[in-house]
Length: 166
Image 1 (cartoon, helix red, strand yellow):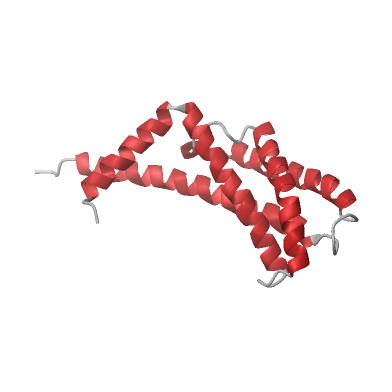
Image 2 (image 1 turned 45 degrees about the horizontal axis):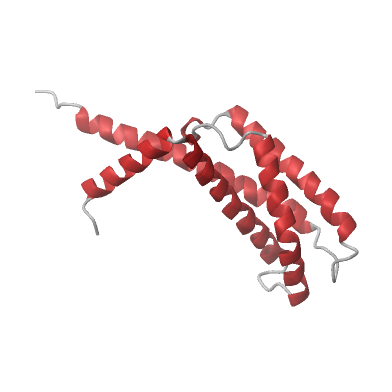
């Protein structure tokens, strides 16, 4: 395992790079949301079928996944969730996140419900409710975790810099 100072310097370099490069930060946020949409949608199917998704519904998952990803990512972009520092997660951003999830859920329903007649075996409607709930947890926990990490790091370094009373 590398020494703690080496890890500390690596994180400091990463943090400085992310703060300085807006496009890299947005790309990382986009990648995080992409992974989150996939994970939330897959988990919604797994929860719906108690961990054993039938082959017919596996096909439905793979057919509808690109549509769901595009709609969710477009909704997040429309509500400006790719900008800003996650260390300043606010009530305003939480509201925008909730509105983005609601808008994405409505858009997915408007696109997939008419297509469900073409899908073999129908479409599990419960995934429409579970996916945004899981995605909300994914996004909020990442933002709050990042904010907590930054605060913890700043307090740790502040306590190291304070001199003891003599």
